[in-house]
Image 1 (spheres, rainbow, N blue to C red):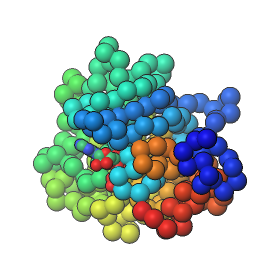
Image 2 (cartoon, rainbow, N blue to C red):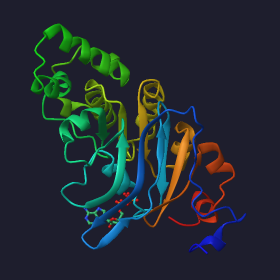
Image 3 (cartoon, rainbow, N blue to C red):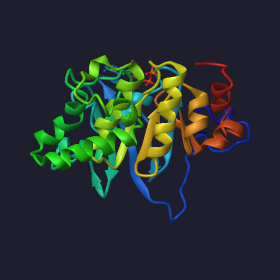
Length: 272
Ligand SMILES: Nc1ncnc2c1ncn2[C@@H]1O[C@H](COP(=O)(O)OP(=O)(O)OP(=O)(O)O)[C@@H](O)[C@H]1O
């Protein structure tokens, strides 16, 4: 018997990991993923698939391994942890030796909890990495600045002040600038680690609206502590507990009819 199996309300298998239909397009998947910080195995079961153009939320109590999992998806853990198992993107394991990490991160972008704009102008925040990659065409750069700021729902507020320091923007605006900076690289997948947790409710709601618009073009995976946020914006939700992805399903099922008692306890506020 699996450990904890008795906790299931309806004797469903402990790891009710969602299986997508044959026609679903999978943007990214993990297989037998284990992450160790020294001897501490922070993630021991993380077999998940992420459907293209959908938002997937990762939820769970503090320390359950959500960020560890998320950060592994674009190798942000390389210097601090040992990652075992496979993370498949377009038929390639992103941990393979031949993968250029910087190139991979252009496809799989990350936005962190605290907005981290560069101490540069709004415009330079967006163009910096593009120029580093050799893009010199002024018109093209301006077009990308405008499109990414529009996609991040910030254009109208900053279009007359693109030379202003990014640090002079509000926290919510800075976070949308960082999202714009990430999408200027035209990633395929956007990973967000609690992107709204440091923001007020209005900025949070604007970020949520932005993400809902972005999912038409991007596959989004977001770590959130905010249950309402997960319920509002995500198509799928994975519940993490003690380093394992315990349950993964359509968001409406996770929040109305979870199959695992631990999930139910967490979303009902009984722990975490
Ligand atoms: N850089 C690190 N070095 C050592 N241990 C770490 C590191 N980052 C995380 N851990 C440990 O790994 C485990 C999982 O942490 P992680 O940050 O992934 O959880 P989380 O679910 O994202 O938590 P939170 O919601 O508080 O951000 C914890 O025991 C944590 O202490």
